[in-house]
Length: 191
Image 1 (cartoon, rainbow, N blue to C red):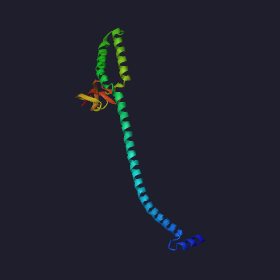
Image 2: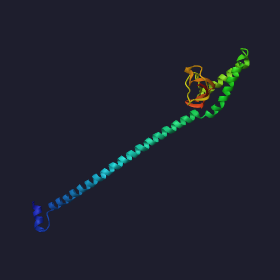
Image 3: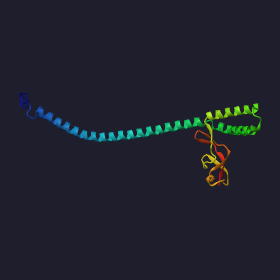
Image 4: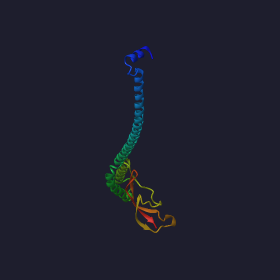
């Protein structure tokens, strides 16, 4: 003990020295810190779990939003490409009538001004429809019947074994708008 501590002891013999008081206080603080660290580790674990749950929730929400964004953009693109489907479907019979008219006028004298005018109008109409995405199904004769794009009107006996189950004749052309069938091709199949 130093002189100050001895003097304190002589004046107040029942009091503990200041040094001991401090060490008891420090011990209490250490015990409190240890208990606090256990509580902190428990609360730290619960905080980590909460953070993980929030991250998972965020990732699910983000992926749901991405799926929604992709789906709506795809729907919007489909809507744009098929928005004119009704108008195009209504124009297809006009194209059919033009084709029949041109076939009927084949016997006319070459150089007929009316036939040339009709042919120009027909070509222009077909070009406009194709620029909008409407395409006729061509080259169906001799290929296998496809129920996804064709409608069988009737079956006739196949002229040979190779033509069984295949398209023999096309009664009415089919049309597609992009990948979507606007009008099914009406065909005759071989039995």
